Image (cartoon, rainbow, N blue to C red):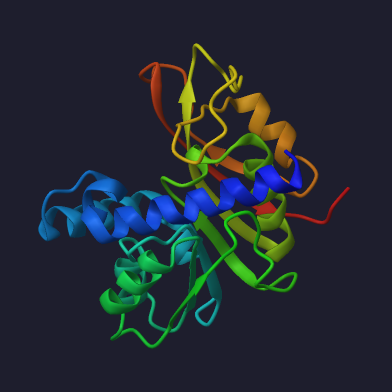
Amino acid sequence: MGILSALVGRHRNRRYWDVQARSDHRWHISHSRTEEEFERSGAATAELLFGAALAALPATGCALEIGCGAGRILGHLAPARPQLRLFGVDVSAEMIRLAQARLREHANVILLRSDGRSLDLFPDATFDLVYSALVLQHLPSAIFRRYLAEAGRVLKLGGLFRFQVQYDARRNGRDLHLPNNFRTIRYHGVEEIRELTSRDFEVVEHTDPAGQRQVHDFLWTLRRRASA
């Protein structure tokens, strides 16, 4: 991806999500029609993402959500672990504004607008946990790969990276000439993720595609290790 193309794509991505935030953010984030549905979806995703990983975090650790949107997940993590320092980043200033309003009572949450392609806001080895849901599945290949590397950079040794992508047995990670935008869903396979993350991570667990629907959410937990 050339520099000009990358800049144009980043601007379109930011503009697209700013528009969705101003129109119907609940629907565009989680296909929720009401605030109650939105809250329930956030609680369900938080439970799915964290599980034992949350219990294993240091009492005063630091966590980062990539693509925090309107604070759907952070709104459930913040009160559950008030001693954790929680950071959320999003490419959309409008989403950050919504998240700030939703999470204003939680002093342990810091929200920042990102460039949509890196975690340059943060120094190396900052976080005990990095997580993401319903975000990485939309990223063009080059940016997806960069975020995997960036998660490794900002995690402390032994820190956990918990994320969701989409799996499709028919595609198994092949890009299939998908449009170069930030809305198309892309699909990833087991060997592809292993190959992309083997330098910085060891696999703790992942969804077993066997017996699953042909297309489904694919959850990974990786642990940061010393680079080979």
